[in-house]
Image 1 (cartoon, rainbow, N blue to C red):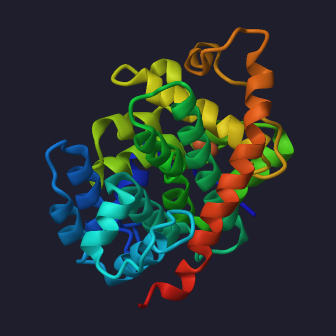
Image 2: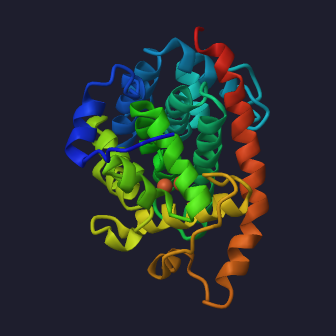
Length: 296
Ligand SMILES: [Fe+2]
Ligand SMILES: [Fe+2]
């Protein structure tokens, strides 16, 4: 495969601007993200936004009626579902459903990215709970979205993207080095650009931009570090992207988020692997049905 010309950043962004199939974050997910971030949003308001998306409404009702929540009677209305579930799981559901719509129906390569993303979201939530980070659902969202730029690069030029993966596998380059070499930009930068276009909160945009270099984050370094460590935890749990490539070391300053002694922190991450595997499986099942319910 001959990929001769390196794109520069400007032509890459110009190219992606013109893409017909640029991933879109459904309006409902964007609105839920914003609404849940406001402390004074009422359950009624959440229910109203949710009702705009029939497929998401169906998923929410199914979730509210699942054994996991153990509500004693059937949840038949969106209003009751919001009360039973709370706003955060609904926002997370909307967000993961949106990312799944973008990634989940693709071929094997994007399926790997989806599983890695889901596991990173779960891992970020587990780490956030452990480290008492104030918003574990924000950590989940950031983990879930951290590699979203990969979709853009792949869609922009699939052959060039294939060459990136080959360079990572055969020449031992990191994925961002290879992407910069062939695309003039990397998935973190492109992902942050996309997140900004989607109107996502600035902390999320920064966490996406800095997930490989959390030491560069200035706005919310804790979130960027959480996502960084979470992606490593996802890899330890068997959800690596790209698959079969040696794990990258954790940036030393990012370790602070796990609040553990230097000698114990590797063991601590290993002790969380089982939880990540179990919870990722559970969420995967939740979304496996989504393929069939997209036209609901
Ligand atoms: Fe990445
Ligand atoms: Fe990643």
